[in-house]
Amino acid sequence: MKIVTAMVCAALFAAEGKTYFTKQEALQEVWGESEITLEHVSDHTFYKSLDSSDNSSACFNSQRVRSKGQTIMLHVADDGTIVDILVCRFNEPIRYKAPPRFYQQFIGKKLNADLRLKRDIDGVSGATLTSRATVKSVREILTAHAKK
Amino acid sequence: MILSLITITLSTAAQFSFGGYGEVSYRNVENDTDRFDIHRVVLYSGYEFDATYSFHSEIEFEHGDEIHVEFAHIDGNYSDALNVRAGHILLPMGFMNQTHEPTTFWSAKRPLVERFVVPSTWHENGAGVFGSHNNIAWQAYFVNGTDDGFDIQESGLRGGRQGGEEAAAEKMGFTARVDYQITAGLQLGTAIYTGGTNNSTPTGLEHHVQVVEAHLQYDHGPLRIRALFADASVENSGLLPIASTTDDIDGWYVEAGYDLLSADDDYSLTPFVRIEQYDLGEEVDVNVFGFAFQPNMNIIYKFDLQNITSETGAQDSDNIEFTIGWSF
Picture (cartoon, helix red, strand yellow):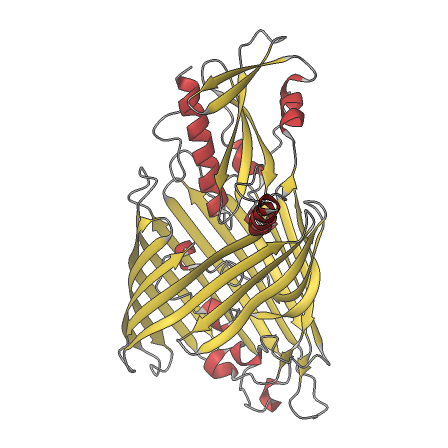
């Protein structure tokens, strides 16, 4: 069963920050120790397992929250369905961090016009900026994925 | 050498963060002087000492000539579940006290319940812990207690705040909050403050203060609903320097808004309504109807009509409010 571990990632500016998963650890969450291959599409790098037959891929994206950043990793099925989302690094104060239920909303969704805050994605009290940054990351990754 | 200096400079810059928010408000008030006020300009700065310890502060310029430190604290981030905060802190009460950037609420002014019963912005010196696990978040702090400057019937608990400025600390306070994210869009929470009062002159009297509030926010697509109930009491309030005929005050509000431009990431137009009631010795009903427009998610223009009715009629008024707000 896929465990949704909503955490945070990559700072835009900061050298320091709260790292939940390094890139390698995040990829291991999806495919374990299997060998990984890369594909570059529209400024995004998609990671795939050579040992997996489902053709799913994972991609990282960083966005500014307020003055610092969040990095997520999105695991996407071959047809563009979101399989999982991991927050890898969060550099804002923890009070801006969204709870796991926010990130769980993305699972099973595909890119469409309503994959936005206040449409198919509900906001979270006290974490509006994080919610907005996450939606932006997800849309950018899925837009690149659609060009594969 | 030059490369080293550049590297050091960039590294130091990366550890800084800077932000701010502010509001300019116009109030056309039926029973008082109309005001156009540079209500507040707030500058945020932060610094990361390392991956664990960071500094966060906000300096507020209010009405153009008052300067306050709204918060200035050191956070020790050990894990999501357990972190330590010490310094000058915002008490974790209600919706507004910790999160009050103008882009986070629609009305030109904050709800009056969160002005009188929860006296935002309430900031004192203290220390405590905060954290979250799964969908539960918590905070708990010891802070300096209030003083006995309350004028309860006029302004609720506002007069007892010390703001941490050479605060008397013979009596301390304790505050705690829990929030639970029930579903993606539904959050329920509660907070408490309890503490002794630092008397301006030794009277031997105890004026124990207690505040309890419960709040709920529901987001579903373009719809957002907020509800809050708060109750506060000050012991022996009839013997305060400004005596009060009541030692228990309360209030509640329900607010709903619907973003008509939710299909656009860059704009927002939200008509909203708020029904509010508070009792500082006289029951007051406040109805607010208006709209908020965001041409950019960091900028907000707010316009609303405020109708106030009170038991005696002494506070009745119909007001027009307009605010320009920003946050970055």
